Image (cartoon, rainbow, N blue to C red; front, side, top):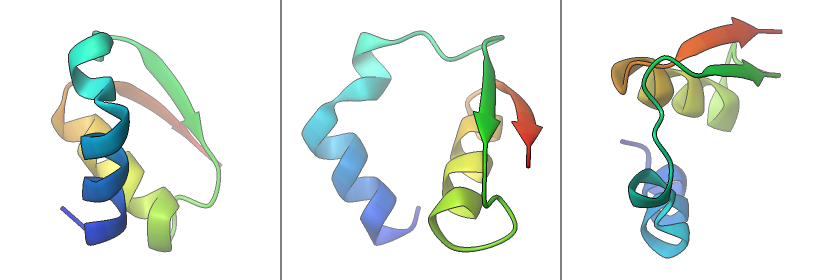
Amino acid sequence: MPRAFAVLAEHANWSKKMEIREKVFAITGAAQGLGQAMAMELAAAGAQLALV
């Protein structure tokens, strides 16, 4: 997991507050950087993605 995303997840503690599996997330900038990292992590958690 990229460091920036790990820090966000750790501080926001969002993975424990929100059920991700089978939800749809729209992610812009998914080709590289933070958008790509978020897309990969959400997909691994079972989310459905709309990538822009």
